[in-house]
Image: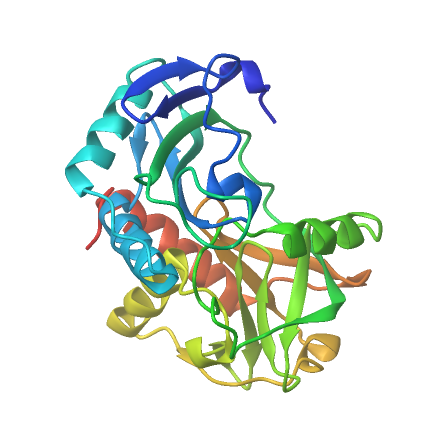
Length: 283
């Protein structure tokens, strides 16, 4: 991965370098994780699916009781950050927090904080390892399906996966159904179909997930939403992850067991690669 020094950061109206960008030490996003965010892939200096990401940022903000940010302001910040240096492939992060507040859970009366950062990164490999973790997602929790800045659970799960040779951790939900990864949605080949958990199972409504489902329906690729028992991962012959920077990525091994990408996985990769190249902002 690229170093922090390559970051360009926009904070509340001004572009800064990584070592000079700052927010209040009492920002609610820092003290209690009261914030939401979006991550977009950058390809040849252009963020992918920015409109969809901004719409989801609105939904997450509303779910936390925060006002939605002005899209024009966010777009201006994105342009300013991407103008600092050309990024061939990278990550764009938009963060929207509750702003400065008290040290408890109550919010203060200050306006929210907007942070936009961009950074070059190395593309993901063609296949990755995944590890099942012993913790569950609460599909009925207050923040279920929201992309919040409260990511400590994901940090712990990723450390668990890394220690066991994986680069992504996979969660069940409270009723034992497959849910999601720490930063990805999961698709499993079952009976000749690509199956992904429905949103009421608790996963984030991933942008790449939604596009793959839509494009698969248009082109006749069997790709559906359905509840799956978490144990399906023990015997799954094909599996893939989707996310904004992964696109559609085959799982090469799960808990150390070899998983070979088959025809459906390859077709999904080809479909997303082709269709995403046609339009950088599919709406």
